[in-house]
Amino acid sequence: MTAIRFRLNGAPVEVTDLHPTTTLLQYLRVQCRLTGSKEGCAEGDCGACTVAVGETTGGQVRWRAVNACILFLGALHGRSVLTVEGLGAEGQPLHPVQQAFVDHHAAQCGFCTPGFVMALVAQRLDRTNSSHLTTEDVLAGNLCRCTGYRPILDAAADAGLGDDVPVVPVLPEGEAMLDYAAAGGRFRAPRSGDELAACLAETPEATILAGGTDIGLWVTKALRDVDDLVWTGTCADLQSIEVTADEIRIGAGVRLYDAHPVLAEDRPDLGELLRRFACAQIRQTGTVLGNVMNASPIGDGSPAFLALGASLVLRSGASRRTLPLDEFFLGYRSTALRPGEFAEMLIVPRPLEGEVFRAMKVSKRFDQDISAVMGAFRLVMKDGLVAQARLAFGGVAATPRRAPGCEAALIGRRLDEGSIEAACAAFAVDFQPIDDVRASAAYRTEAGQNLLRRLFYEVVRPDVATRVLDLEAAA
Image (cartoon, rainbow, N blue to C red):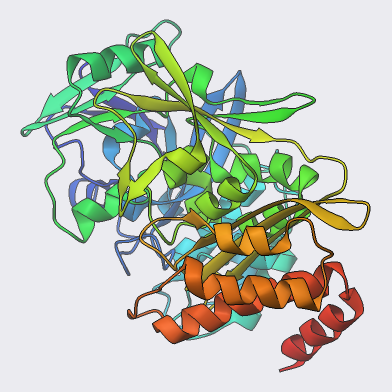
């Protein structure tokens, strides 16, 4: 297949001449003159461009709220797109969400309104995996510049779930892999892990595209030319999560949104971390493995998975190797991934008897913010002593990294104020943070040490931790 084919508001679309990194938002506004979707940030932060994208997975139709500003056209092949213009024909009654916005005067300047509406419409269309989300969670990726959030929340509550009938996307059975080339760019969408391996064997230098929530910014913000992309999103065998007695196996194409309830069931703190991971639109697009493979020192997923003792299954052709995550990060944005190799799976161990796990994020905002410091702590207690300790931090080194000195300060001792203070002293040896726009080195050191103290209070003195959290909430 050499053309990108999808449905737009129910009508079939075929793209043959645009560069594959043309974003959906550019296509909607320039080629289609559908200007309800707005560009406010071009980086997936404000939600003004939100649309609903439908796909068929395992015979089930799923709808997702996504940011059109960083979604490449190639990633729409075989899917359906619903924009605010597609909610109803002229002269017909408004969609229930639109009507609720009118009734509650939830639009002020109106710039952000289509994005808010489409975030709620997508939620109405897809109820397969949303029981963990509040209305505030659903709308956390949408910013109102007029700060009219109260009427917006009232409108959302009034609209409810409803019984919307989606436009069902169709990807013909047995269709060949998309291999699209135009305007000097190439986009391949293999249908399986085997086809993905073959693509990378042919062109090891190709860029692997997962969710695109970072690569999209290479194009829209850094203005980089990305001319050869291989996408994991259509590899059916990489979209699954397998839970066994000992481990959770997460395929390369699994979105953060879909992994959330599975990981949260084992470890609620990990679920809470994922709830704060960017916003629903980003979690509906970004993948668990993409966040790890990005190798950012401030990525939230990597410290948590380091603390949990996760490992990667890396594949090149038919050859596979399993590498502990501890050995994967080599330096700033540098990893042990070899040319032509890709991460096929992340393996996360299940909880052990006596395990304590906490994940703590320090950022200026609760939603949609990058961590200044991220701490993840896994202890295994036995007979009142710390038998095992894996402590990992993000934002304090060139890579996400464990804290060996902190771990050694705790192992074999009771978890008390003395052992925690010893771990705090070791933190200043394990890490020498830098100053940057998000925090100073001194702040990061103090914040990292305070996260260790918070670990003690949450585990040993939850009464004190609860009082502190209550005071923070009141403030």
